[in-house]
Length: 478
Image (cartoon, rainbow, N blue to C red; front, top):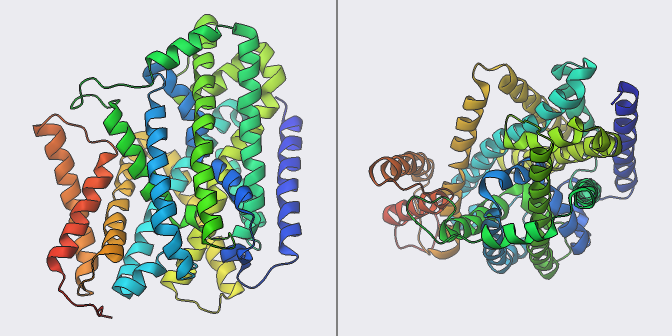
């Protein structure tokens, strides 16, 4: 692909995003950046949230999973249904009833300001690291397969990407994201759908696909040592959906732009149901990508390199899909990074600074600072010695922060007790330490890998510690 074509594709795409932001920002209230004026159609939010749920990791990694794990990932997707149902029935009515801008405001009303600050800080750490990691993976592939051959330095790619994201989210915020996410989702699905259609036309073998789905979707063998076991995958999916969507300001902020609780519930249920065929689409794409790569003797270093390797290593597909795939990669990169930047700004301004005036000057400063921070972390990942190993460890550590969040929310919703304010941050740190120890004990001594069940273990530890250190008193200490 020539530099001219790449620049033209990028310019048109970002032009549409900036135009959307300008159109949305014309008629908006003072709080539209944070809550979208509570006027978003629930079906539009549900469709747009698909892109944020998939992100660049799913867009690239899920197809690559098929070569080693078949369709076992669908067990986790089925578990999502339970997690999203719990969000719809338990969390959404509470958040709408209290009219929160940040979901961590809920913790303050039940447990005090310290709980709110701990929840907000947990989210900020997790989201900064997680978003930088996801964006880094996509930029790295863009650099390797598209931009590197055109002699564009990665520093330029990172800085321009974050500047453009800042440009179309700084004023419209979540109100803009509801509409731009619709575009991002459509581009990703179009890229995957067209590629799958062309591969099916080229290879046929539909019976082989059906056989693979039948043979490698459900696994009930060897629970202790089998990471693909149905119970691990299903319960892990339920926990993952509940924690990383329901307790995550990034994902819930768009949901809270619907006009009322019932619309928010419809949005979450619709999203959960849509994720079943969409993930099946990406896994089916992975089956055909693996088949094509084997027949064409294409080699790729890692599973997430499968998709771009097939696109750019065969003449026919390069000519037909090169531009569309680049658009898909850009959409995958932006779909999670833009909403992350908006939610980080909201959380910091509303929860940490306690800015009840929603100052636009503060918002722009915070928004720009987080964009700069993400760019710095991404470049740090790129230049760090043994970078990939370090990134994986940091990302794993970041996931531990959702455990204390789970415990905090469960305690706030169920336990009519009070906890001394000073105990809350201490218990969070203790929970993370105990969760790390439990994982070591399970893997080293019992030869059992808990996988995402660790979220449940982590949350249970936090909840138990809160109950143990609490007292029977209906008035919460401030």
